[in-house]
Every structure is written in structure tokens, then in C-alpha cells.
Length: 198
Image 1 (cartoon, helix red, strand yellow):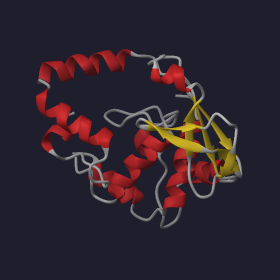
Image 2 (tube, one colour; image 1 turned 90 degrees about the vertical axis):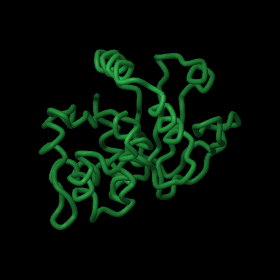
Image 3 (tube, rainbow, N blue to C red; image 1 turned 120 degrees about the vertical axis):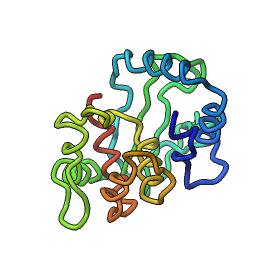
């Protein structure tokens, strides 16, 4: 929240609604309210909410508010070079059901490629995630948990770090880690991380 308030955390996509909402909210909220929200959210126990499926196809989607949702006809389309993340029960999600789950469809081979990059790094590409995020990838000191998180959310964060839209205290370190990764590397990394237990 401090980074949103100071302008250190932005987005590479102008006028993107979720970051714009967070930025505008951060301007109005007090430090005491931020601390209360942080205490609340940090006390929640993470649960597995994302199932990652490697596939050549995914449900055909449409924009439902701020997310993608599967069409009700059951039609499918090629996954291509992307993550297709949809709620398993759109009505439950829209009703703020805390038990809502998602399925993320990713290109075949993403999990193995992502595991190699996350666990071993890669010469000239990146370093192991565990060095900063802990051996279980559930956070280490000020570094957040990255296991079991939404792959579309994590992709946006890595992309924003790579392109200089995030400049907070730890951002320069992450910018170096992701500097030599292409979008398919990022996709593979977030697919693997999303498949992990939080």
C-alpha cells in the first residue's frame, strides 16, 4: 500500500482498472487502516484455489467484469502462448464466495519448464526463486509467498517489474532477476508456481 501511495507501484498498462483502484484507494487510507488490513490478511491461512491444467485447448472465454470467464456453451479454443484462468463457478465468485476456485489452462510443457527455471534458475536467464522466497516458496523475511498464487496476477507483477512499473524498495532486485526472461519463460514460471500448494 505504501508503494501504491508513493507511486512506486504502478502498471505497464495505462488505465488498467485493478491497479488504478488500488492507487486511488491508497491515497485515502490511513496508516492505521493499512496496518489493520495487513494484520487481517496476514492472519488468513492460505488454501489451494488454483488447479493448473496443461492443454492445447481451453474454454472459450469472455470478459465478465474484471475477469475472464468460460462461455456456458462448453466451446473450446486454442490455448496458444497464454494462461487462460477462469473461475470454476462464476456466480459463486461474483457472490464473493470465499471457497471459489479457479482453473488455469497453460501450454503443454509449461510446468516442467517453469519448475526448471524456478528451482534451478538458468545460465544467463535468472536465479533460483528459493534464494529469496524460501525453499518452500512460501516467503522469507520481507519476501512474499509465491506458491499457489494466481498465475495471471503473478505474470502481471513480473511483467511490471521487468518493465520498470514497480520501483519499490525490493523492486530493483526483482527487476534484475526477470530482466533476461521472455514472456514464455514468465508464463512457465507462473504456471509452475500456481501449481504449488500455498
